[in-house]
Amino acid sequence: MNNPYSKMLKLMQGEGSKLNPPTIELGIIVSIEPLVIKIGGLQLDKDNLLVAEHLLTHKRILKYTDSQEYELETTLNNGNMVVCYAVLDGQKYVVLEKVI
Image 1: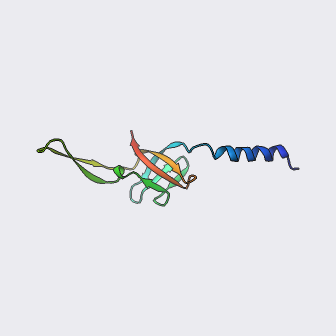
Image 2: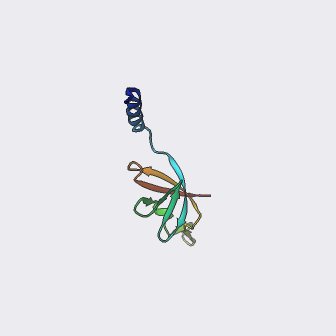
Image 3: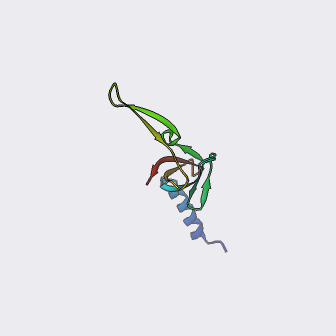
């Protein structure tokens, strides 16, 4: 039997969810090469991830004075916790930051 109230409730929930922004979620790095991050029960790979440039393995040179240079290296490792933000209706996640 069709319940018109159930139908109306589902319609209202669907419309209301359009206005709710996605939440920031914590993920755990399962693998670096290839990159796999687990968020809840969902495992995401390179096809679902956009990673902030500063988290990728690279070196930066910081010049403090004309004679002093410091080299900073950022690396991600298995087991690291990262902050992720869902975009494109949860089809992709932006990896924003590593957290401790």
